[in-house]
Length: 356
Image (tube, rainbow, N blue to C red):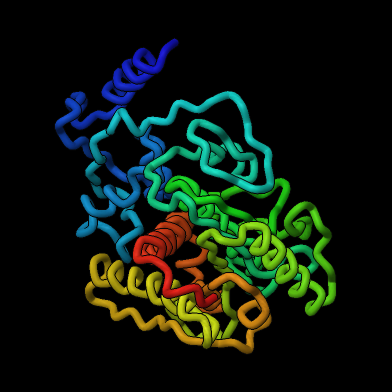
């Protein structure tokens, strides 16, 4: 079946499956659907036959007045469904790319994202020529910060990794080259709230992650710096993602660190920070965003890695409000999307000289 026939078939399926009051709507009308208990935005869009990540932002914009905290559905309420754009419906090639250096190739799948999320659909070439190194905190023998939610243990490394994978997919969709430094062979992007804890993560090119903390950090620094040397002359950035652990009563916003002497690192952190300020103003106008960006050269990865970089703390895993931000898959997707938009802003505004 050729591409035209596939799109025609998909068009017919989508029109037949989107109903209101028992009647199908045409492509230029907005269909609505009632949210059921347990629905999130991603699941709701999937039920309507739409690629959830392509339509996430548009759905939020259409329904902003009817969402809790700008991203959560109310069971029993009716929501508008974005019009399907047939040109964005992915036609996935059968060949699966298994390289550990992931490059944007339209129509291919990437096992690292898991079966449900393996397809990366090209959205633009806005990050063409840019190289990103993504490091999720802890992993392997070190789960990082721990907490208990609903009687079950949750660990920092699992949530930092999930957000990192979502960010990688966003960057790939805009034409970037991405290296995922900490990798799990069987945990792709997951849409559960409670992410199962395991210890089988490895470092880039299947290196065993050391038990000793300093050895662990040095391993990551060495990998990033070697890749940075390999890609010399290209636009390169490092993004490290962590989840903080503080007292249970301390609610924090997403904040960013950079090297005190890195103008480009500061610019990257500031670009993402500005994006978060803009998103909060739009989607949560009654809540002030208090996240900051600042230099913190004392951190091992900040001090010793060569690319311009930002170190991101997503929230406090022990705080109930922050747990909602971290555990909800819609929130994790929104975080990845917002970070990627800040990354694009940084890239499109250019480098400051050649300083780090």
